[in-house]
Image (tube, rainbow, N blue to C red; front, side, top):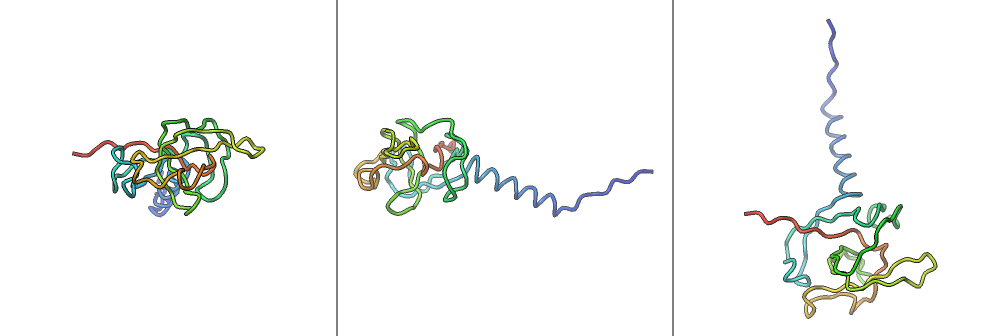
Length: 144
């Protein structure tokens, strides 16, 4: 007769938490829109998905630049990035890009809100380095 030892439920919980953290910090995150700056595309309080690997693999927010980058944000993309003035995350649309003045060839983005009169964006704080982009924003399907 052969008995198989059962695994402790604690190991399953630890593995699930580790997998969830890995997904959140490196692949896919959830964010809530705050304020009217992206109306009519997104309204305040609307949840959105952030595809953190849209442009490459990077360390979690605040811990450095991209480890590997395979794409650049393009005009029209909606991204979540760090506001250089407040260091808070913002959801904005990429209006244009240009090579930055740094020797590493980093890209600079001009970010605008879809609701111009009610948007604090690059018109106020200037360009945003591509390293400050946390990911591409995806729309969640509406629930009935």
